[in-house]
Length: 352
Image 1 (cartoon, rainbow, N blue to C red):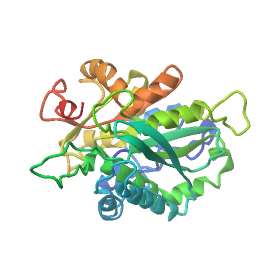
Image 2 (image 1 turned 180 degrees about the vertical axis):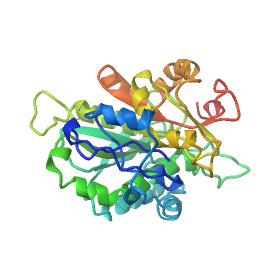
Image 3 (image 1 turned 90 degrees about the vertical axis):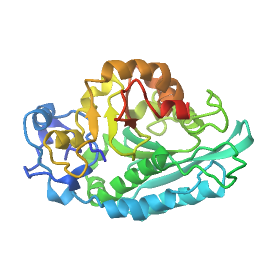
Image 4 (image 1 turned 135 degrees about the horizontal axis):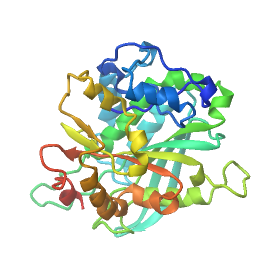
């Protein structure tokens, strides 16, 4: 799990460091994302010089609920345009609709040509406050890959637990765990007048046949283009919804054992360094999974070359990068096997 920080208020004069309390593994998610550096002094002191202190009221993450309530219904074949896709979309929507925070929910449907004909795709969107001028996007993809026909095993399907049912379940659990706090934030007008949280569950990330620029990333390509044409705030003639995005956080290929999570983009290093799990590992507090690795320095030079050669052209980030890479920040979580050197990314040849 991962965590960024929410501050009580956006501006520095209203920021207060949280009360000190020894963290435990239950704090794997806490208080959502901190959107802007309105009070950098105490924020950086908190992360760089002080021990972590997180109030007990925010430690509501429930691993059993994540697995049984959020994840199990997603562990089916989820090919775009099929009954399985509709089933899991309804699951996502029903879970978010049951929360008290009052998410504004939308199914963003469209039809696109694929190597297998016309297919209907549907992105699932949830916004805490649609009127807020700026947004933080927390995203994953809900579709699963189509496997080539196997005469020896015709019933074989690709469930895609880590790719990416588990990231979807993680986001649902985060929204559930923070429900009370997110509801309270909606009452703070000056807070949500600045930045709000948007959840995006992309459809059509996987290719139907061979990965190309036209046979992949259907949902993200459609949404990015739509956001470039959508005025925001409503009625604006100068700014669009895409320009309102402060940060895009994409969760993908998470859930495998002993992952190595690295920072892919230099301009998001300061956000990467705010990960609570990184601090907990350094303090030896995550005793149930001490071998996981979160690395922003030792593998960066190697992974940077790989990312800009391959990942930017073959992930959701490629789509958004083309639109705002020079003015926005991108943030990417992914899974690599920690048993082999980073240059031998074991999942890459299998998927691409």
